[in-house]
Length: 82
Image (tube, rainbow, N blue to C red; front, side):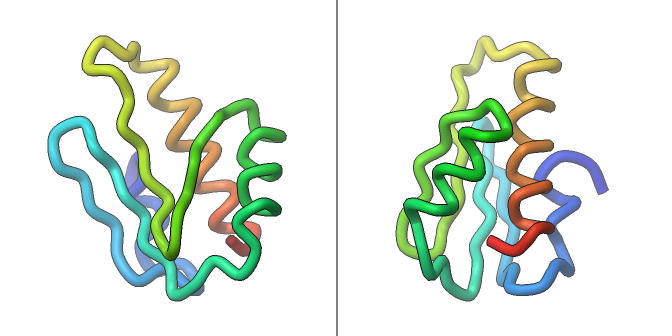
């Protein structure tokens, strides 16, 4: 799978949804939101997860490279144990 779909089947991932420009990775739980935010920033992206959701709402004009940077960061952080 590409993009956020790569998270499907990962430990603690309940669902991955993409509708239009909105992408969501739903987890069983996010025990430490601040730690998750820090790890995403360390990957070079600013994403604000809440409750059990890591979501993207990029601008409709986002380029392929920037979108790949966002999705790759989320995939890496979720794979490392969100």
